[in-house]
Amino acid sequence: MAGGVLSLGPLLGGATEALAQSTGGTAAAAGKASKDVYGRIGVRPLINARGTYTIISGSLMLPAVRDAMDAAARQYVHLDELADAVGRRLAKITKAEHSLVASGCHAALTHATTACVAGGNPDLHVRLPDLTGFEKTEVIIPAHSRNVYENAVSAVGVKVVEVSTPDELEQAIGPQTALIYIMAGPRVDESELPTDVIAAIAGPKGVPVLVDAAAEILTIPNVHLERGADLVAYSGGKAIRGPQSAGLLLGREDLVRAAWVSSAPHHGIGRGYKVGKEEAMGMLAAVEMWVQRDHDAEFERWESWLRSISRRVSAIGSVKTRVTQPDSLSNRTPSLTITWNEKRLGVSGRTVTDTLYEAEPRIALNASAGEDPTRTGVSITPYMLQPGEEKIIADALVRILTDPPKPPAAPLPPSVDATGTWTLEIEYLAGSSSAHRLELTQDGAGITGTHTGEYVSRKATGSVSGKTVTVRSTLSESSGDALDFTFTGTLKGDSMSGDLNMGEYLKATWKAERGG
Image (cartoon, rainbow, N blue to C red; front, top):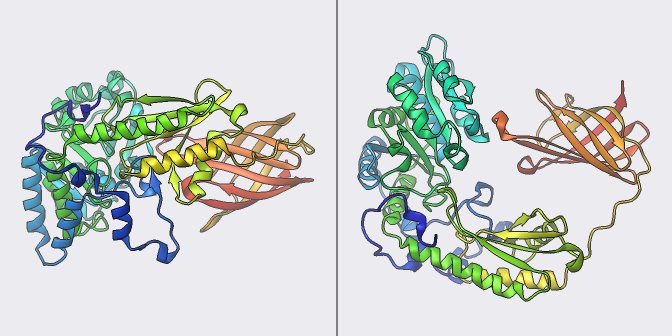
């Protein structure tokens, strides 16, 4: 599917911009231009072979976007006039009724929800999230679309109603229904509640359908609007390569204009989601570039980088490589999976990713594990790489696979028993909690049990090495949130204490007492 990024819709304009414009130039040029702006404050930049993750700053803006933002920063304008003009220009390019630049996809979802709850009535939207007396107080979310980003919708004050079937959707819709929210992706398309089915049920009842397409490519005409959705939101700083703090809302003109009424510089719940003139013009430039970029050439370049890396690492014994082509619109890029026999090479994929992330230069990769328990590996997403970085990645992988770091020490036989009910005290980076409990059963070196937090209980698993106890629990996105806890500590008598790793919520410390 090389070059298939535009398969769902023709783009306006032609591929008139040089490929260097679409890739952002060479890594060396980018480094020189930066003048070590991060290094001077002690922050280390990285080579991004993972993709458009917000935590590693999404994507790099295109040169045309940087130029537009620089030019926009040099004059004053009235923001209402700017929003209207940019919205009309973006609507013309995207073939949507109207468009709004928001401060990210999350903000676009919040503005869209406000529009569906309060319309364009300032007397209503300034009262949000207090919905006392409001008619529209509920948002329906199919089970396949529950995710960590739905807080952008529920923050408006609405009640979330979950459905799983067309019949449940029919029954859930009523006068109180403000909208139906969908997280775009294959699991939606393959379910019994795909967008077109939802729209066919909601449309006659006058209920808008909002699609979250944050990490997707921009299809023109828009695939989600053509399937019956009323609104669709995108991240600006992902595939489109606009400002990281910008996003798009496309769709029905009345709802998009109502969304603008509830956004900054106006007051109310949307005031904090401010879009400057620089982001507005930068987002416009990114969409204008989207319809000029040579997407086929970009795709071929990504594949050539993956072939280059594959050739280098394939010369190492037991190493196998596989290029996977995209099967959805989200993060639409080929990817390279590299696997090897862990026992033969003496290093795991997790160790490789952790080591290269701390190395110089710093490289962000994804660890990868297949069905074969004897094999381990890493995966590489190329579409946020800069030219020349594929050689750096190949060199680093060859070095670490041929001369791996010393493996971690083997687990010790357990010398303690963690069975029991534990009351925890957690000291977060900011704040503390005494509400957590662990109910554990130890069998040999293995641990099973339950981790109960402030509101939710979840399955816990872990292990014991000597006196060191490790317990892990996960709260999945099906609850509308996602939390990972890894407790590691030393057990002595009826007390334990140690460190807590919570992924995106960083680290904490904890101590626990065993009791009844």
